[in-house]
Length: 251
Image 1 (cartoon, rainbow, N blue to C red):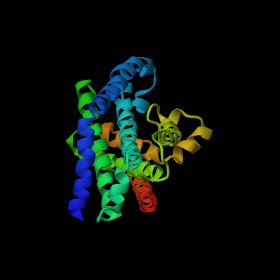
Image 2 (image 1 turned 60 degrees about the horizontal axis):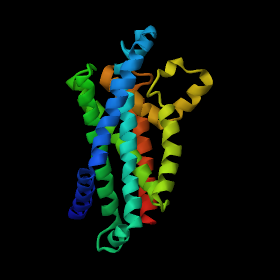
Image 3 (image 1 turned 90 degrees about the vertical axis):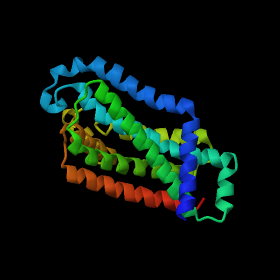
């Protein structure tokens, strides 16, 4: 079973290496967000108190961009499943003498590895742009948050891909689900500045706690208790793993 999982995992990683356009965009898009949008709004947000932004907007924005990019990268694993179905490769895997759980776990690990790799690239770019992180002691917490967020949205992508038969339909469904979660997560603004009625939607959004945990470990700013953040993230991840596994086994 381990060999089967590794084979599926290796295939997912080789596919990423061969898609040069995807490799380039995974670097260029965060660079645009941090380099252009972050610096462009940095001066505009200097009027906001340092207690909200931790000194500058770029440092505040970086954890949000990190989570946002990882979420989109993680859900891409679902597109590969739709692609495999359209070209018949998924059918070949499902009728092969390997367990479906091996296929599922291999795809999950592949998606998680790609998302975490993307996150590490963003951290390196942010350091070159002058963002000061909390220090080496924050690395385990950042990696844990990155893992929980990526495994949750890889599972979500696989769950949706198990029911959708076209790449266009998959992209529409994922945009419908992901974009509101990102904009209501506090990735781009302090949650404290929102009106009371909007804070309700922010608090019931699981991604809010991923952004909050990452911001705490990265720059030491948080809206909620970090234990609460990690607990909600873990529960959300487990639920999506079970949901993704259920739908994939029914494929």
